[in-house]
Image (cartoon, rainbow over the protein chains, first blue to last red):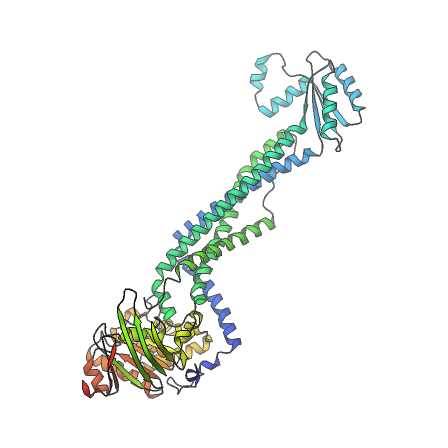
Length: 330
Length: 224
């Protein structure tokens, strides 16, 4: 535009011409517009607190759900990990076996290369533990006779393979004193598999819910674009680039995502608080001081980042689809 | 500054808004464009702003061939062309000041520079005292003057006006025309589409008359 670039006679008093827009100036202008767009889009959200809060809450629930499930899975996993290294056997004795005989058997078994340690739990001890754990002392008292057998609890060496454990179990099963032998490892392995399945399911769920967040933000931005159609037309007529028009909407998406992420953290923390009491009680009944694993700083950071990116992407999708359709002159 | 060579515009559906139109407007000229509704006035202005593209022929603005201009360059063309609309297209969610500042914000001017330029433009159209008001609180003539201030605030070399006095009484219309003429006097190329033949005649500038998408008169206002 050679003629257009010629300095114009000054119609509006002394001043710089368009030529003063150097690269450095434009870079500053670009930065300024980012800041202005971020501020303006946030203040627009504040101006409609109720509808913004609704959107934030929907996003927060969608994000908190997989988060809470992930925490549940990792806690169960953590509990399992504690035992997994120590496979154990519960050796249930026949009811007529007396304590002395049980102790003798225990001493004998402790000589086995696979056994690290063992303990004898007498029927009365077992009953006491059961009473405490179940809180059904009245019912148990009504039974009169103690229905529980004595148990030898054996911890095996960490390196004990499944095959070795099976052989030991068979040997024990053949003894006349022994009624039944349970391998503690089996349920742990099953738990592990179930947890693996749970993690997979949770990832799928998280993926679906993330898609939901994309659509929620996309739809909200679509409405915002429709509401500001006049402004977009004027800005495009005055020479606003697509990036200039897009920017405030992308920031709106980021704010929706970030706000939803913050609320999701709050919801998750509330769930943890609500659960921590019962968990401590449960752990106490097993003689453990286990407490819930919560959200780490890295987890929080990841959630906020992911939610912001989701908001930005959702806005980007809506903006890409709907802004191109708004062109002056139609 | 503005050249059209054998330009035709056919809208989807087969309506020929312009057919084989050629004309040339030099830098610093002031030109009036008249013709009945549907004669092609608005289409001509849209071609110059690249709101529409010619079906055939060439449109050149400032020596640049608009036919070949890629979409990403269109915003920068539009920054060189100030436009005044009949319905002025002001934004009622912000003040007069912010409306006029918009082209400067879009072009990336420094905020301090923006203040100075906006007030200069406001002063020029005589609305310096109303910068903080919402344009909805202004009269029709004042709103149109805000529209003009917005169109010239970044000193575009070309100013287009589409029926700028369409909604105004004769006295206000004359004021608006005088204002546009003042910009022309300092070198801005001005093109005004208007129905108001009396006013056009009094302005006594070059006259282009369109009829059925063709140029039927190019010369003095004596024919009116």
